[in-house]
Image 1 (spheres, rainbow, N blue to C red):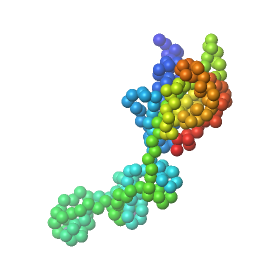
Image 2: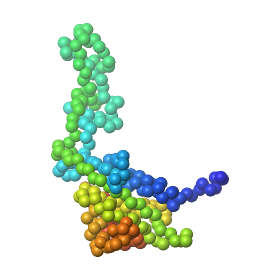
Image 3: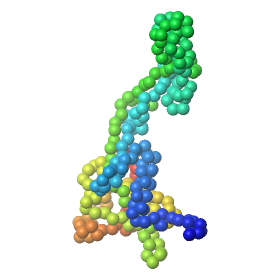
Length: 245
Ligand SMILES: [Zn+2]
Ligand SMILES: [Zn+2]
Ligand SMILES: [Zn+2]
């Protein structure tokens, strides 16, 4: 094989099986942008991803569950990039002498009764570990869990020619009756750019209307074909990641 053959490969070159996995990954990365942690179920039971996040109970902002390292005196935050600036201080409990570095004995009275005091490089204050609180002042958070089914589609082709449509297979077994269950349709256009439609099971039922009772849907033969230009009746769900909140 020459190098020339390996140039300009596109999503269209992926096998159907790999493409479906590819869609799940794209959806995972997109969900990460909205602060979701993404998990992959061991078995495929019509749920492709489990997602979860912690948010402030009051304002909904993403919550950090790991404690922060903050100076008691001046408030400097050492949690992220400043850890190496923390001064390792030892304090002698016998004579109150303060020493810097990894001492095992007091340099003044030789006592071995020393305690650690991680100290601030700016003001010398003690650094303590504090539980995260939101910038809105709230100290309470909530945990959200959602289940996601991903369906991916490339642009349909006929005789090598673009039909300018996507096709999504939906079956009765996909209609999991749970208000925490959602569909994300990952649609890849001819420039390999993904578009995401986010909808709840209720949204799907509503938009399908009477065709949900159609014979082809009951027989697992239904395919939603819609325009790749404007997503047809499904366009109202474009990038509706807020639905998951
Ligand atoms: Zn808040
Ligand atoms: Zn300080
Ligand atoms: Zn001492």
